[in-house]
Length: 248
Ligand code: ADP
Image 1 (cartoon, rainbow, N blue to C red):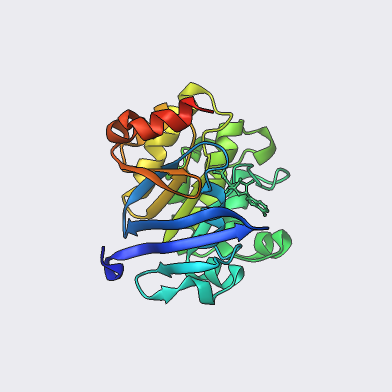
Image 2 (image 1 turned 90 degrees about the vertical axis):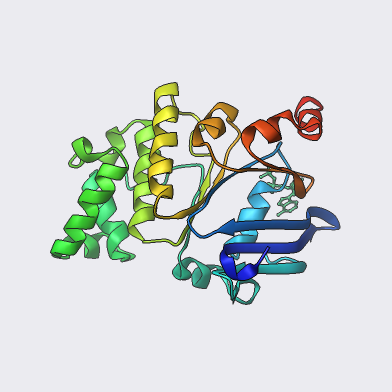
């Protein structure tokens, strides 16, 4: 593939921990505006791959480029976050003592202190963005509700909203539906498809039904490399994939 056409470009990437190759000659291309699901059994290297993209882990070998020409191996984690690579970890980390609205305002202002954020007089543009994010994340009716009283699924959506507020170019979303009800899981697939209309997204997920609902290209990792890639039908019928999932 042409690096110039990609938002994320990993080629020949390897990283070892104490001599153990967690990522082994990994190649991964994401086009601008594409959403991709990354699957694979425990220990496949999914988290380490996200750590490499976000600059938390530096690869021993290989190329990692953002936006075609930004060499991410030359930047640290805070610089990469500032460039617009946003990551949502599995566990929601919303401010429980504040409303949904305050949480989004905080994320939008990018201010470290929640007190400074709450004292800030909101601009019309900020207000418009918050309303838009509330709609995208299905939280409009809960705007003035304390984050503490949201369901687990709603907290995940709020955190996705907080990520959106930072206007990322790429969203990395780690196991968004873990612990969600079936209804929340189905809604999350729709929500992420909405977001993917205007963002590049990588979703790491175990739930195959959910991945099928996303309806996007799938990359299956195993032992730090790409085992299989393509549609969910192609990947889930791939004998290599069946073997690693059944062989666990
Ligand atoms: P996944 O997210 O797919 O479950 P990980 O990326 O967490 O996989 O892990 C890949 C492999 O690398 C695993 O065998 C794991 O034990 C190992 N690993 C990950 N991080 C470290 C680390 N900091 N030190 C040592 N081993 C690690």
